[in-house]
Amino acid sequence: MTAPKSAQQALSLRAVNARHGSRVVAADVDVTLEKGGWLAIIGPNGAGKSSLLKAIVGIVHHDGEILVDDVPTSSLSNRERARAIAYAPQTPQLPDRLTVTDYVLLGRTPHLSPLARERRSDLAVVSQVLERLDLGTLATRALHTLSGGERQRAVLARVLAQEAGLLLLDEPTTGLDIGHAQALLDLIDRLRHEEGATVVSTLHDLTLSAQYATQLLLLDKGNVVATGSPAEVLTRDTIARHYDARVEVLTTGDGQLVVAPTRAQDRATPRVP
Image (tube, rainbow, N blue to C red):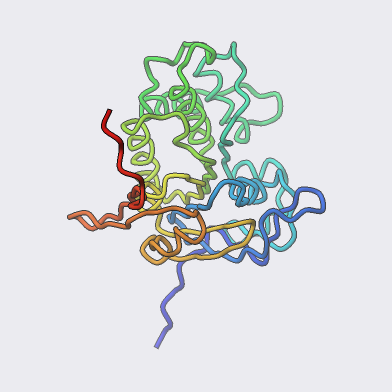
């Protein structure tokens, strides 16, 4: 009898230590993510989430081995890495005078020969991405004229225009209201299902992490303290221990998890004036 074929691993981290100089900021990380999956890296402030993401993309030094599609990233050239991995930082540097279209076109750079100009196909990719992110009417606007939420969507548009199989998103919903945050995460989720994109994100919002990610990795003080499905990781005791927070973990009628903060019960009764 033939053994079933195992799912393709889009990302593997093996004994990875992310470092700032000699200081280890994320230690001994072992995790695998199948193609089309979504790994959310969560944890309190200063846990090492962004540093681990930067280690994967190659802008923070690391020990151990990182593989993308079973290929060690250490063996990839810069162009090969940019074709395989697209990265959106939490606080990107945006050239103010560029238009939205020109900025998103930067995502096509890994697909162009040196000194080559963009092709009609590149412009078509950019146009499609702008429409999908509700940026079509802003295509000719300069970046410095955009609101915070619009700028965040422009950053994601540049990442999507790169057409890499692995998307690394550092707090992608920063600056977005709840409607635009949900719309953005819905779009990322559709890309996973329709195009097989694989996503690794950092997210502060535990409810959004639970509802969109297929797998969670919880860091605290640079150490991995829990991995698994949202239901396995997001328990009241675990959140209390590592976030020093009071919460209830609820389940909606359609089975989605909600992490709801609760107010302390021993508060003093307000005095009536």
